[in-house]
Image (cartoon, rainbow, N blue to C red; front, side, top):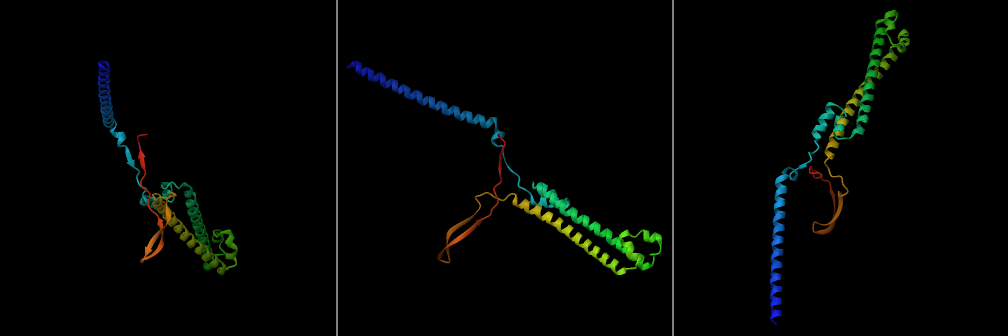
Length: 221
């Protein structure tokens, strides 16, 4: 009987010792983990705080760049495929402007030769474009005037379209820059919700068009 009692006493003591030992170990582990966490925070403050907000796309900058140099705004927006289109439109209209201006001046000179009666002067006739010399020799002012007016009209149209394409280049860059920060994910959108319209049940159609949140860049990796 005494041996049984002594056995239970020993088991109880061992059990209490084991529990206290586990409590000490768990407290020690918790303390070490907290200390390690503080050490990490103290040793790598830059890495923990190295989360920066991506700078928003600047529409004003895209507008200025396109106004100063056509296509520069498209490059800023990373729409490189639009640059050849911009230069093709401006290049063609610019070429047509100078082409028509050149022929307008040629027709103007040919008309001056006919008006001044200098068609018999070889020097004056040689300065007339070969394509217009026949009209000068026959003194055909009407056709020369018609040609001159047509080239003048085409010159004006070319200048107008050149300025129009320049303006469209600016508008395109500005719109693209504004849309750069908009959320275009599949979550957008179109939702149908129940609603009360003046006390009567109905439905509402909601278009959710909002700007996306600034992207976070983690510099820890």
